Image (cartoon, rainbow, N blue to C red; front, side, top):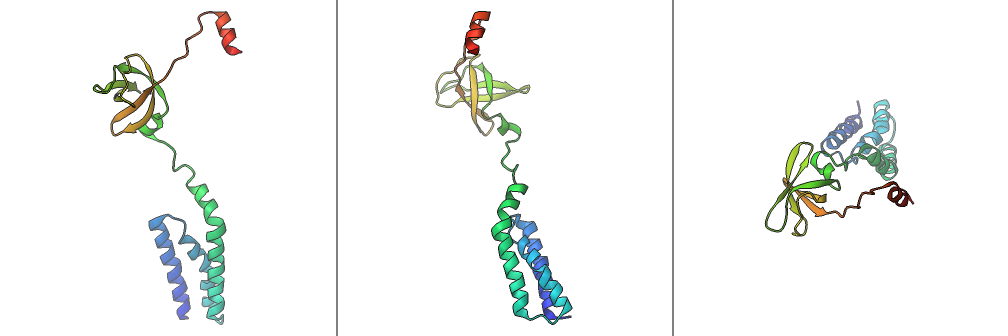
Length: 161
């Protein structure tokens, strides 16, 4: 077997290993680009310059044109909020007063969390609050203005308009 056969095999194996370790979708294209030169070197008789061109051109084209779409497809759910961070933006009622000096609390899925006022303002017990961010084990909240509930049918019809 020719030396280039082993070199192309090494390129394929090393680029796959690098891709598995980094998951950046860069090295995998070199392993794809090295497949045809690997086969050509096994057959023999193909000049090294041709093998290099057959390696470089598809590898570069794959990186330029396919990588961006492959990343979107593979990593589309990577920024999905999970667990406690999924609570950001949700609204709850405050169980205890919260202000600059005292932490309040809110109950989320049968778990009581410490609630901290976002800007230090006093928020009374029973007030509707929105979680703006999570800071360690504390929910940072801000007061939310509540719309008054309609009392009779005329007010409901008025609100629908």
